[in-house]
Length: 166
Image 1: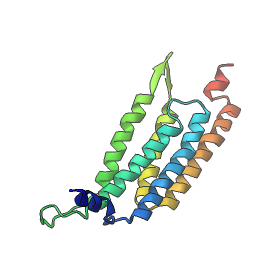
Image 2: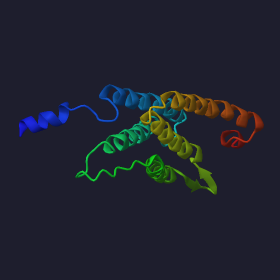
Image 3: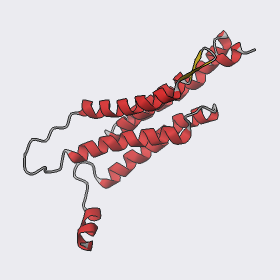
Image 4: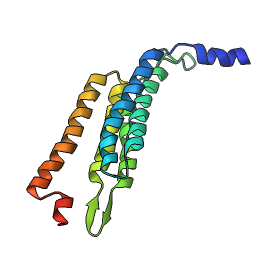
């Protein structure tokens, strides 16, 4: 019995080698943290930890999807891996979380940007899991730029919520 357990933990990954899997998960942590840090800094309801968790979960789903396609299910030989289904599953789950953050208070819709940033953290995790870390990193940098720069533009135009409060 113990040999079976030891063998379970010592086998190599079939689709994505263990070091590559670890690198992808680590990239998802770092890139999710980049966005989460900005949200945390702004005292938003979903901050650093939440964005990291969403990004890592999405990454893990992709790696698991790749690994599962390599399993032998009773010799059926009909293994199908539809990447769009994996993306849809992650998107639906993250959308559920993001929708829970958005609410109306005093006739004003709040936390839409934080919900969108969570959705994006999921996409970044998907990119990391698929081995597209440079693309995910570009998206993370662009998003933080959008969050920081457009906040200043909104203040300058007087359309930002904080500038309307007086």
